[in-house]
Image (cartoon, rainbow over all chains, first blue to last red; front, side, top):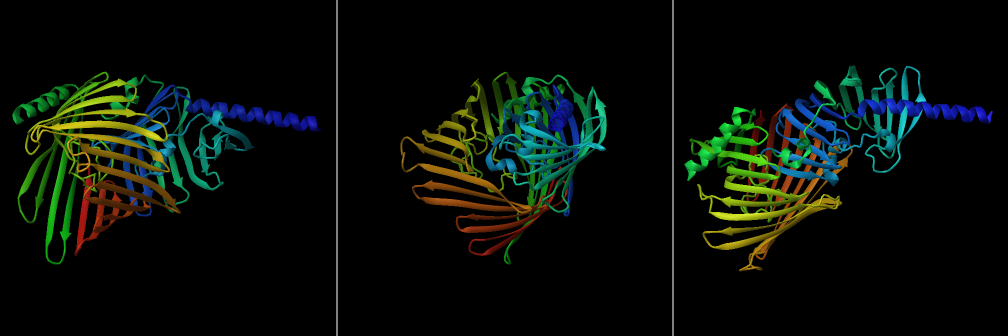
Length: 232
Length: 305
């Protein structure tokens, strides 16, 4: 009986590892260039911004605001540091400490979200809760450094794309919910072209991100990820 | 001199425009302010054109301002410069901002714009005519030399800054700068440090060799975001010490929603309160009041496009 239970646990562990490997494969890209529209809504109105993002393996990310009231603003995440460029004063400031908790473009993302390490298998321990309909997975952070100490995912069984994610604080409070749709296969990786982020601690607040253009594993110049280019 | 400088700027601007991306943007604001005795209405529009390629960049921004007292429209050049870069080297010529030091109101680290403090940094950025060369010597270490050109009200000066970006969670950067003013033959020196220790903070000091104590000015800022239930509270404090006395700014800003922000400033003897509402993309409606010896009110509509 004990042997059967251990065997079942062992199979379950292999399953979750395999699921996370597939999930990681979708987000583990050599590079990507993407343009997206952000529609930010709350009970007092809505606003729209357009962004262009550049990412490369290792986590370096650059975001340029190419449309909307904050047009010209640029953000660079490099070596775990985050820099923000203000076009009027042509000033680059390093975001750190409490600044990271500020909202990005007034959306339901914080700057801290942009600094998250995407290596799920390195940073989280996974448990498969259910596999009827979706792979229902709970991820628990292996260290206190992670912004979200728990992530609850509902992964599409064919594409391993999370159609729903709930992000939790260290105390177990649900902070954000992300619902993704319009899953497409692009160059062998599955991508959700539309994601809706709901800030669960706020009333009637949501951000919908729609990807309008995407290129995967494309060549991006090293200079894109430098502070000098941010101010250019 | 002015013509030559503008020629350099526009030449760079034009060369860049031949093979570069172009972007156009701007913002406009309508304000009504005053008390029961005096009222003034002001309209301000800024238009900016940018062109750039990998090596060249040009920027041209104009401000148009009119008010109910002078009843004239004043057109001023906000920015007009050409910029060239090659590897770790950058060269700029024209009218441009130069963000040295740190602090949104008091900033002893900025020797080039020492008396241009403003709370609303978004709508007032000081620019001047200059030639600037910047060289990245090694990772995080930059040296800059700037010549201020005697155009309009700018006094001729030459300045230099060395900045090292440490980039650790505790220490962000250290910088040292100096400026020589040709008119009164004076040298000013500045030292600064910024980092994070519970608060995001910066400390800057400037003085002259001739009157070290009398001219000494030390400024410091500290800021922190506090999440409170659904809202976010930003607290920012700034101090400026001179031998003549201590000046302070305390700012508290509460984000009730991403569309509604309530702010209050306490700057020496003046208290200001503002409610800003953003009903649509780029549109901000603000109502404010301030008190020094009498009450003063402001209503403003801003649109960024």
